[in-house]
Amino acid sequence: MPTWSRNQWYVAAYSAEISHELFARTICGEPLVLYRTTGGDVVALEDRCVHRRYPLSKSHLIDDTIVCGYHGFTYDQCGTCLAAPGQKRIPRTARVPAFTIVEQDSLVWVWIGDNDRSDEALIPRAPWLDSPEYTVVRGMEPLQARYELLVDNLLDLSHETYLHGGYIGTPEVAQTPITTEVDEDAGVIYVSRHMDDAACPPFYAESTGITGRIARWQDIEYHPPCLYLLHSRIAPTGDLPADDGTDDHAFHVEVVYAITPETEHSTHDFWMVARDFALADQHVSDFLAENNRTVVLQDVVALDVLETIVEGEKEHYQELSINIDTGGLAARRLLKRQREAGEAAPEPTAATSTR
Amino acid sequence: MTGPSPSRMLAGRHVYRVVSQLGTDLLVGHCWCGEERSAEDPIELWEWLLAHPETHDANSAAGAAGPPGDRLVRT
Image (cartoon, rainbow over all chains, first blue to last red; front, side, top):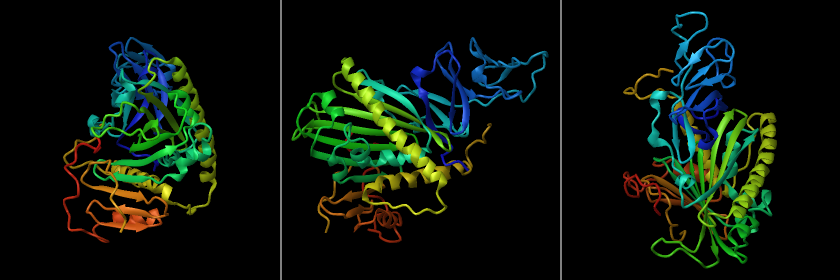
């Protein structure tokens, strides 16, 4: 059984990645071919011709149909075969599965599971990514590690002090206690670390221009399985939000990750950094993009190593968890709950899947 | 016993909260029913919280917060 949850939404791509060209990406073990129709909708089909398994992503997009590059089977946006080579009759089983897609907040979300169980309202929001009040830099790094290792990594930011020193890590991150909350009904985890007098790491000093010590707040909001939001607030020490909640003097950075399993041992590590200051400053954009990518790659190197260790370890290896792992432990539990719910039969009132 | 409860960030009806106590190795777990307990081991604390109502129950079947809907208190 795969380690990811079925019947969940996952980020398959950035909106900007999908054009009127065939695009291949494997999501949760499902090889997909994606494209944007002439009408602007995103289509996702299984990337395998029903005839002899040829990848549709290596085929031809003609108008809004895919013509298989091997024998010419032609599929519409729903995966229905419109033409078969050398005959008029189209076999009844000549169709490829189509996946439910929702495009929102500059992200292309795909439902991995039974299409008739998909619910668009369950997709968590990240409005900063598509807001004129923010400037966003982003990227995606392939991770040769299971997605749970990235969840562990992101739920405990004390590792910034040691793995990302000189970029985003300072001693205060590891030294400051955290508060963890879990909303059982919504399935959301919140991990809060407020450093009221901390050194300003180069990542924020260079981008904000602050030269002294800072109040640095990190508020993680994780919507398992895929969307991770880090609300980062940077301000000179002592500069707190007003009683009415306004916070005009602080710098806000929304760091977003989409954690999408590719296979059981690899992950798409989508990362985004949205800021509400220096909106038109290309130097700041370039700096944040380069430095955040460096930080992500530091994680990639570490997690790739961890994957080989986890794969090779003996069964029932007993790891150690301490206070900093409180959020990570909560995430593991909610992911397990989602896996079990995703494998369970649908409610009796739900329709039977057609996939 | 443990000082003031921390500011709530999540607004659901059934929110568990675990707070690291500054200057100590203690974690304080707050169940949505209103009961709390401290421990030095997060696994032990989660087991206690999640065992509600077997290990504790403050006679609050309805939960400690307002109706679910808005996920964040601050918004």
